[in-house]
Length: 467
Ligand code: ADP
View 1 (tube, rainbow, N blue to C red):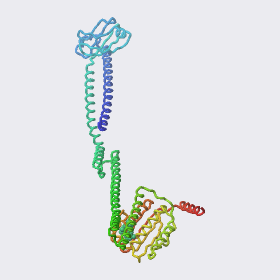
View 2: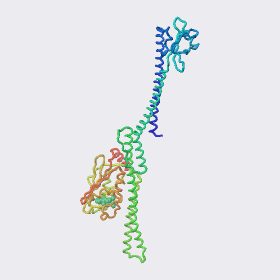
View 3: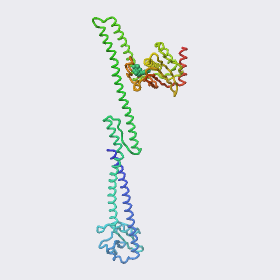
View 4: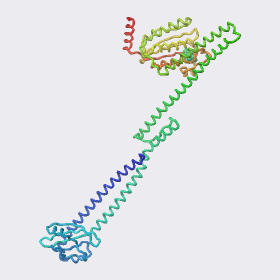
């Protein structure tokens, strides 16, 4: 049974019961009032007759009041002519009660007419005086009232049911719309749908708003999920493709080495060197893929306090040793500590430094600087290299994205993707500013370590030196 029907039925039933209660009370109250009035009329009539007409009772034919007198044995003495041959009844027990001075009212039926009989003993005489009047008028009024109440109440209940049905339908319409929308979403998987509702922010209004807000959240989550899935697919496809190239080269080279007659020693040396290069490229690629796969699998990085100055100086020193001919500057560094993972941060800075050196001519400069602000420390790797075209910038952190492949050479386009993933996993951020021909600045921001964390770090360092 629908809520609409139950609601309508419920308040129709309440109205119906209220009307029945009210009608019953009205009917019985009116019945009582008219009976009391009739009794009073009979008493007044008696007073009047006793005062004026006792001796001329038999002249009252055709009038609405019937009067008779009987003696104390019950024998009729006189009666009004409108009674004809009928007698107003008086049972023995009633006669005894009347003789003891009681006044009694008793309904009776004479010639099919219902009457109310009032009997009393006349003071100082052994005579019983009886007056009666018809109850028909009262009963007809009560009957008419009863019919009116039954028909009126029934009609009111039916009309209330109809109006209630329409009102409940109107009130519940938005809920039906929500049901339809939810059903359609289930069938079509279209989270872009919304429930239209123009009305006040009452219970229904709030329900619609909440439902639409939930849909917006679902739409976002669904979109994110779909994008993640698509990215994952592309990643697997790209990874397979990247691995296939060195494998094909190696297989071709093996075929060359197996050739009969054998190739010249000079060619052989070149083929072997090619194979070594390709194997190294492949192992670098597999290593990068592993780092990304681990990060994707939710491997949690450490959240230790790390002093930036020694870490950057160490990286600089090593880079200078490898690239003696290049200018790498790491001066005026802030001696602050950030919260992060030492190995991951080192890897990120190595990727950035490696790119900077790769995309900067030998005469150019690569500088690492630090800055502190807003509870964060920023490490910037700045180069005076070729810069990045504006249309490329939004993509450089994507997996397997390479700028102009003609100039990038060996990279698989995973370096910055790894850097981004590792920085985000350390609750930091990475950004880039670049100008074609002038150079690029990559900035990594990480949360600063609290004073307590740094103190604890120093303490650990001291104890490890002592040990
Ligand atoms: P790869 O590992 O191939 O270097 P990355 O993800 O590190 O890939 O970089 C992606 C692309 O971003 C590069 O192919 C290059 O076009 C561009 N890029 C990265 N760093 C720099 C830089 N310092 N100067 C100019 N271009 C850069």
